[in-house]
Length: 85
Ligand SMILES: [Zn+2]
Image 1 (cartoon, protein in one colour):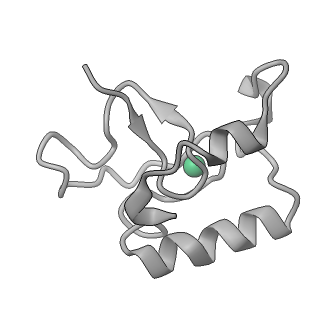
Image 2 (cartoon, helix red, strand yellow):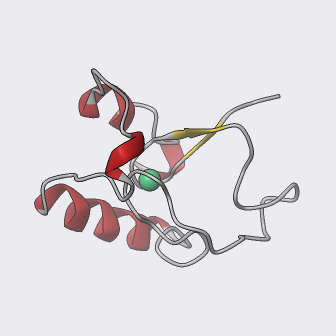
């Protein structure tokens, strides 16, 4: 199964929080950037705004305890879907 990548920070997910049809967001939060799926990432503009805000605040993890050792912000940002860069 294809991975899904957060539109704001690029974190990979085994399942899309936007549902099987890609149009049914579950309104959970990204573990990394804290984006509310279906709200902060509902449009390109919203995703860019949220990303700028998150990066400006220091790119902290929403759940810092699950931040992987050796986490690389630049590598993760490179995974952001092209349509939302
Ligand atoms: Zn994210």
